[in-house]
Length: 84
Image (cartoon, rainbow, N blue to C red; front, top):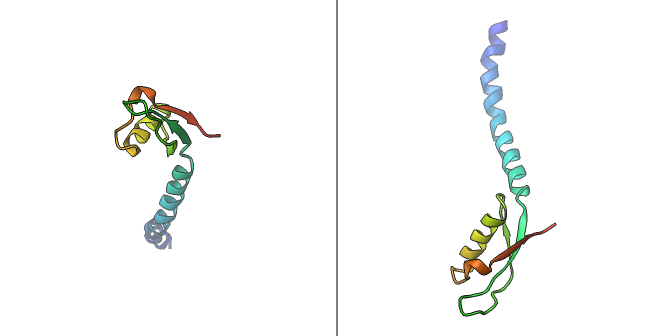
């Protein structure tokens, strides 16, 4: 009788795996803080304000914003602040 339980255990574990993965993904996505970033172009024009998601902090937020602006922002002028 003990053998029946052991045979059913892998099937039960495998059936719960998608549920655990979905919950972990939703939690990780919800945990990403948002940042508001401002910057200027090389010729001094102000770029539109962006809101970006960055888990690793201000430096990552600046990199994401630089990419979204298409690389036209002067990196030294990028200022990102966390949203609360």
